[in-house]
Image: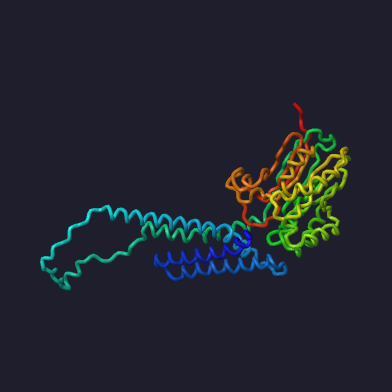
Length: 421
């Protein structure tokens, strides 16, 4: 119910803000072209949002050009809440200001009425009118400037953020992380792993950027390539493209994957069947063994829970059965889309876990301030507890086009023997 309230509530808020903003422009007596421009902007956003919503429920519909998709996301999920907040604050302060003026007028002493002496002012001759000062154009008051700013900020923010987003969805970084592990087999000291997560093949990750991700990963020449879920963004029709990209990934000791929640939104059964048939190393509550630099390594792939909306990803539902498959004499690595699986890995003594899902917090105010730490215990980078380590990726692709302080990334891990004091 909350999901549908948001879906249908956002365009209503957008329409309410448009009506309010148009009234402000009327009061400011701006040129009609400005009101027309604002109306066209909002209408385009509403049409793009409607088409985007329909394409979400019908994967056969093409979502449209990237600029309209990005603009619809940013306007409705960022700018509209911003516009509503600004408009609400402006109305609140206007009411406070009006109340203060009324209170001030009531406190002022009444002026005595002027006596009517019967005299009337003399009529001025036409010659006298020439002495009157010429009328100067009036400047906007501070209140009018504030009203104009309140109207202009949300569209300006949306346009600027969309321009930034179109650049970001085509870029990513390679992040190098050394992971010290106690009791790491000596032969694995210096072994490398390329970690991809949240590729989200679909609206924003496709074509050129998807090929660049494959090329950059292969250029690392890693011993292992691990993909921790959200291979596709939503539509099962994007899965063949995603599977083809994974097949092109190259690693000396293999490529292994687990599933994420976005993979299952459209058709869980179809995703899992096609992934298994593609032979891409998809592990669904399964394990696989490989040799890395002559050492036996076991990959444990955690399946997403049966309820896609559960915040903990059904960890309690799947972890016990998966961990029973562990071989005591083999170095284990856990692949889990949700990073909170790390707590169970610590208890089980699994030395290394890879996860994603958080997008590094997506819209962070600073490296450690923002949605990441508010929503997740582990949200980006390297974490250690005792002899166990976790690497959380910011995600390699995007479902939402804009990021701040959480760039898309391929994580390049180098395993190191932890030095004892």
